[in-house]
Length: 425
Image (cartoon, rainbow, N blue to C red; front, side):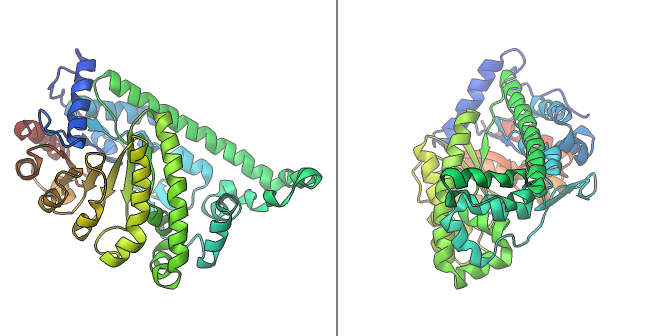
């Protein structure tokens, strides 16, 4: 395992509570559009921990303790002001395997030991099934959708439709639970649940251990934009894009209904996590996927509804805007000021600052191309430009475009965090 000895900005080891309070205050000042003592810097990554620790992606996906040791060493060395808990996006191999998950390939299951995830774009719900979802979302998920996306749920397709029964017929209907196919699914779901508990417990322990060393976490919970939920995981790319023209009313009704369910579950999960931050990665919102007119009609209302519910519950959405979203900036400015973080990947940060000034804290966006193929001086120069042009006056958190790329060399990661302290004061 590699590592440097730490930047020792706040004497973390000897004054962890003071370091924690100072970092969290710095981040919250940025969120609330105040001027912090210096520009805060975040740390998020999906699988870069494997490169940093000199191990394979497969090993960190299946060994939560190894991942914890590597990630904690990274926190000690780079001393970010806020970090995204690593286990929730990396230590998921056992859970995926137990579920027999079909919607992606992962290390050792379709891709090599050093490779990241491979999303599979497929149709898991037909356009005709919008009515089934709208009529009974829970029944549709349990008996139709979930059996298509993971082998653990396949037996649930043979359960009776419970709301159709009452009194003695309801009890007689319990015979379905003796079906060997249902029994097999229940056993597999128990194993999957045990792996999920192991993941959540290990992640929570890491967050507590990091807090004890002076490092605050963000993204205690992950949720989705309603349009993206249907596009990514149910209808697929072809389906969702044609639905905007062939089934617009059904799509709007479904995303509106999903927004309520997504927000309620995210609020519940956030309360349990103890973190006010809710991470929302977006995929179908960028400029190149749909016109601004369709964005405003189909995409933005659902996300805004989720965000407003979170904000009204005193939670802080962190929206990760992938690709270029420049044409969306004026539309997405329609939120209460100082209540969220917009993390941009490719959007011009200077333009974003001009449009969103006084509305929302922006985060990002050192490009992956520079982080992976550039030199430390390139990273340094880019960070300096962001800090001087965007970071002055508050409302900015320095970070990679999508966090730290999986293949970023250590020298460039060090350059990013050194630049944050060199120019951010």
